[in-house]
Amino acid sequence: MAFNFRNMAVRKLTHIAPRYLPFADVATKDVPLSRLLRLSLFQVTVGMALVLLVGTLNRVMIVELAVPATLVAGMLALPLIFAPLRTFIGYKSDTHVSALGWKRVPFIWKGTLYQFGGFAIMPFALLVLSGYGEAVDAPRWIGLASAALAFLLVGAGAHMVQTTGLALATDLVAEEDHPKVVGLMYVMLLLGMVVAALIYGALLSNYTPGRLIQVIQGTAVVTIAFNLFAIWKQESRNRERAAQMEHTVQPSFRQAWTHLVARPGMIRILVVIALGTFGFGMADVLLEPYGAQALGLSVAETTRLTALLAAGTLLGFGAASHLLGAGGVPLRLSRIGALIGIPGFIAIVVSPVLIGIPLFLLGVFATGVGAGLFGHATLTATIRAAPSDQTGLSLGAWGAVQASCAGIGVALAGFTRDVLVGLEVLAGIEPHTPYNIVFMIEIAFLALVVLVAAPVAMAARRRRPASQLADTHSNPVEVS
Image (cartoon, rainbow, N blue to C red; front, side, top):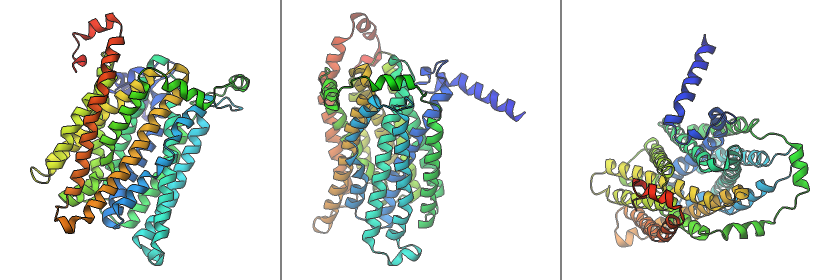
């Protein structure tokens, strides 16, 4: 009876998913939705890592453990060292030669082990930083160094897993469905972030250092289990393909990269990605401490902010899917995302002196919606501008620019906040003022996105076929 009920439930979910789950129409008979959703578990583990590092640990280290925001931001930015390598990782997974014919799986598994190693080190680092139990006499620098190493390993593993996992997803579907399957993977990333934030918030409602360590250890186990299940039998063994690749002369990384950036509009697209990532990403390290110090939110409440932000981003992704499917120009949607993010940050800035927490939450949600539109639009623009045989490289380029600028933005945000806090005694500024100045800088970057993306959006519209333009003149997605 239980078996029949489960089969019936699966059939029902499979039937309704294409109607209500964004990008679900990418599924086919050969690549069913269940297989794609299983593969997307690697994005769930990446989302868990993001919530834990950016959402929970940065607030705990800044507020509860009194670690300077500059140091915390520097730790969060450490994966920046590996971010530019996403391009090289994507290229290597495109050209990797394996005796079994695998291209992506070896890199996903290596990244998983890096993630697990970082989570294994992290509890001991937090023990030293908190002075919990027998770690009370340990030098503080040991805790800081161990935490930095843990952040580095988790970040490096997430970069490797995400880049090659997305490339594997595109390998499974037809070329015209690449943007859809990558979109589906990012929807699952956001769902993973929402669920993880809610679970972490519930587990940490009564915060203690010991409870936080248990959460980290559980995350490590779930990460390695989910990733192993995600890649199981996803990439077929093909020794004939391996033998063929051995005798095929592959272009060097420099040649492949030169060919990619020579594509029309690619450089400007990467510039737009960089500016928008600064505009949306600098707040990542500051939203939770801002909620705590400016509005008095607890650890559990600030952790749930990540869920609210991810829910807004999910809505933005869904809207982008619909608009792009109706013929929308990707770079035009990126401008719309920036235009939504600007009032969102304004609401965050004025929330301490006006409506308070409700306005702050509304601003956080709006920035999430803008980030979702921007992220999917620029990702689609990058894939469409790249050759079909450089999927991994193009995804790596998008990820390298996005992750590098996110890391730099986080570090600059923490540094700016600490410098301004140091001037508080002299200037008599309010506790929320240092944060608000960073948010105003983000507004300026989003304004630059609107300006820089405009020529590419108009050029893309001019290059489209006349018949498609005729359709879009009556389509609301083409309204600038």
